[in-house]
Image (cartoon, rainbow, N blue to C red; front, side, top):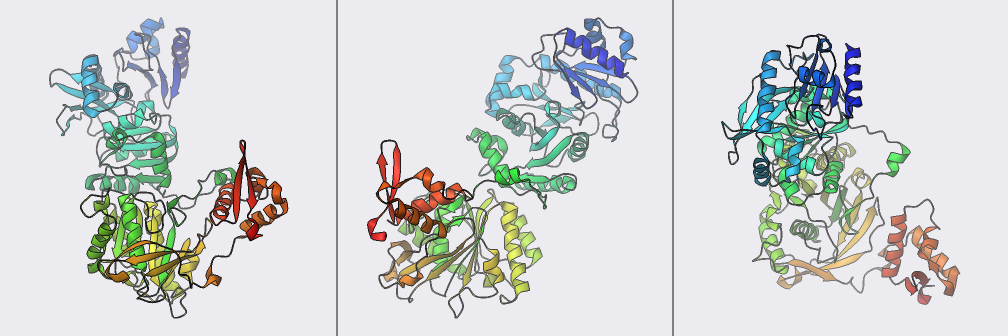
Length: 629
């Protein structure tokens, strides 16, 4: 029978029709009508019969073979014009006759989808009319409903969904015992597979160019067995499950992940700040933004093995707070009791949530969802938040998305597996994925001994699990010990990416000095200071932070020592003298260093007035300031 398939392929090519392979046959442009997109499916079934069906004009095997001028004996059994082969996984348990009736019913409905009806549907879902080409949509004039063909993993129609405009509840007609998938016929069957919830989300993803990699299942809980069969029939490298931002969507996405993660690396992604993918796309989301969202979401593939080229393609670190805290990192901010560390943490949190610069430090931020776990002085967070709004003139305004900040006043124990799992499940039910989680303080979110390496490692693992699950930054607030260094086991500062120290000379002194002791993936920032103002500058219910210069009597020996790269730049400029050096010449001094790191070093030296630049035409040269030689 394979010879007969090849005869059909050759005849189609002779007629100038495009032909491509499918897992069990061919897909081609139909010779019976002007077929712009391949809508003819030719399959060799398990029982040896060849079936043909055109989803564009409804032509059957006898029509196609007659048009091509071939012998009818090629079909072997021309009376059986089913399109669904006997399914080896026994997913479609109805007769071929029923499947044929469904196909005929759907084919007739496609002829009733006039341009006017298509335009009305496109306007209703707020997507371009061209998107409708990526789904098998028709119209039933009897029920005055739009029809959507649902298929199995081989793109055979196993059900027809009918939906009226304005009726949120779909009226489904399932004649083969189960719901089907949408978009299977357009899949590339390799690479990444994106699974959406609902047809409109699928159409939105097709609009952005994902049509060769995306399908939809009809609801949050349907289609799992068909998706498993589809994965077995294709050559996919990973699955991305897009769930709706509601309880059924979150539970359904997790259920699908649990069913397939052992078969293939799986990511679960939720649209940021929107209910579903369609709303996200309508609001202006681009393909690049969605790709970035997928990239930021952790896959269940725990052991990723990368080549040197893949390692080189990993993105550069991005700051959540400019030159302060890196996105997706684990950080600790510590200081003595009364040093103002919780005020700093809350100031950062509310600035990020509101989407405004961190005013006290003069640094830009990335707006995002904040979760503040208030273990210490939980009752005082309300008055502190009110003070912050007063200080930022936001008391009578919404101040962006400030009202969406979340406070957790019953702190979980991060060294307890059950608490961490329950917290993750609870956070998945909020509308937005967390970008920053603050644990205030370590002592209030840990049951073990903070001096014990074993107990501290358990805490770090719990905090890091939050970071990995949501791709967010986790900021731990901690105390200093008698030595004024970070308290407890050294396992904590060794594990985190960023360590920040907060100091005050006394509780009466309003000036707080902030020092970076560790910044794993970037240069440590320079020491700076902020001032508590309100209520005479003390820590109280009406205090907030404003910028400040470092105290005049500060210990100069505590200032950050210039990095090796900074000293190398200064030495090179000193030797260059009045000739100076171009930027590319400075970068060439560090052939093995990251380009952005050196550019940041040059920027810091210029900011600290160690060097200056001078433009000569289109070129810029750098010189060392004479007083610093």
